[in-house]
Length: 452
Image 1 (tube, rainbow, N blue to C red):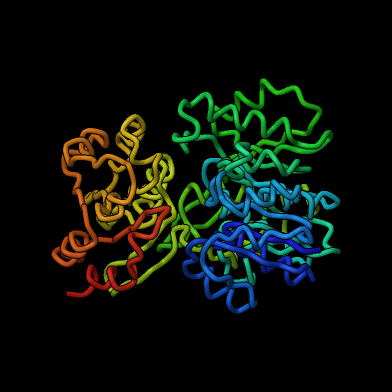
Image 2 (cartoon, rainbow, N blue to C red):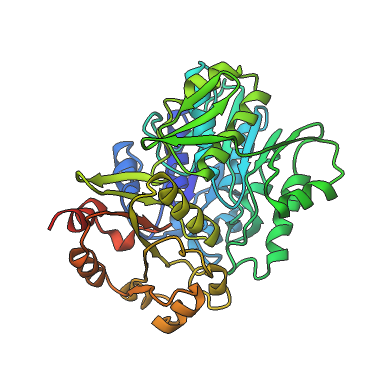
């Protein structure tokens, strides 16, 4: 089978292309710009295209086109594929086609998706289960972010609620038709697509309805909005709620309380304990013994950029976290304060998405950084010039966050100065972003904070 990827440079798109090539498909692709690590990964597998869109690349012998979200509706290759009648898929549609004969576990929710998916994958690997997967981050113990095989009976899929493609305006997680679905919680996000909270919540209502008959919904019983959705749903599915397990922190190590005793963890924070409970419940439905789960979870070190260690000196430690939503921001700050109660916290959140820079949405951040002694917001004004988003003033941000002492860092140089002048003694540092801080090396910036 011959498959062409339009916008092959995306994180999932290029991993899917590589997975198909390994499966024996003939794969080609295109994109206007391809950045690292996609560029190196594609080049390594002989799939790196010349930059640009060319209608001539689309020929009648192509069996399928996979359309990435980066490609617009007037893309010349897309128009040519439509003209020739080539079958066009969004990547979630294509994943479903590849996995429709498998047992499909789909992990959804406004937060924790990658970590929960990672835990499930880690546990299944530790007990020797054969499975395919799609996950939103590179994991140390797995070769890529997508694995597709002919024989694996099971596929674990991280399913997000953003739109599938320019010509398919359905949220991705509506397309997988799970046998087992998990929802970690519902907290308003993607306001550029879902302008009201109710329109956003409705996507999860529809996700529940997409579960296969006699399938299973695993859900967070501590989320009020989610509880309401579950109660109103009358689908013929199993429903299994979970709660955050009890835990203690002793000498910087978090211990989860279980029926077989306290289990030491390599991750921390109440939200990560909730993520573990979510993964535990899914793994039980998949037939994993409790003792096997507990043995495996001791070795789980977390997903990339999810409260990930960056650097430290004898007194201070630096972490980074993939976060931009208000709920995740608040949870990440609380996790650091709970784990290191004797340390002041310098917390820097990068606002860069259309959602987080939307003035109608900003008030959702109210009081989210209250636990940080040194709260700061980073908005890269140089990057902002390339968008149509209006610049935000310092007063607007302080008012929205309800934080008079909020520092506003409007350039990479400004952030460097802020960290260089900061005395690190008695303080920890947390970088939070769903972007990349303008491509900076966080280790170098951590050193500016740690070493003067």
